[in-house]
Length: 231
Image (tube, rainbow, N blue to C red; front, top):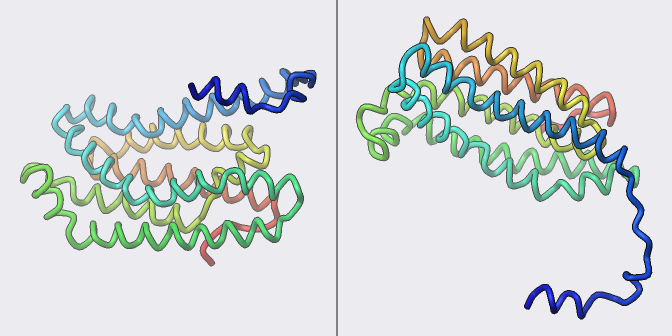
């Protein structure tokens, strides 16, 4: 019924317009974005897989709880970023860079405040939270939860750098940065997991994530002329 209603409401002129396809441009933009998606999966799953291989599935299970819990810190930032995507693209195309700077800075402050509140709760009550929600055996994930949460707070301070770069035609730069971050993540996990276990995986992942977003911020500064941050 929805499709039929839409068909009836469409202006008749739309059927007289000849579609124009820019397949080459679309494909040149699509491949880097596909690569970014692939590297994002690699970055977020490498720690779990390597921890399971080196320290066993029990350690990986404990770490998975910390990693998923830390993602709550980034939740508001993710929501704000998704909501801003069309605005970022529109302001960049229209050349309203000053307005873009103002909006992204305001969004970074909102996301950072929410991230710090959630992370602060983890810092104070993280161990109790893990014990109550998941069981006493998961309390050992508390240091990893704090490490990963801290990285998401710092990333929130940097603002919407990832999507600003993406919405302004920087998908190739995005792909290059996240590829390097994936390599850093693998090397870091390989070096730290044998010595520090769950906390080592958390530190390696936190460092690679933060380095990735710092790289995005640098490229945004090059293309826009300003840093997106809460300051």
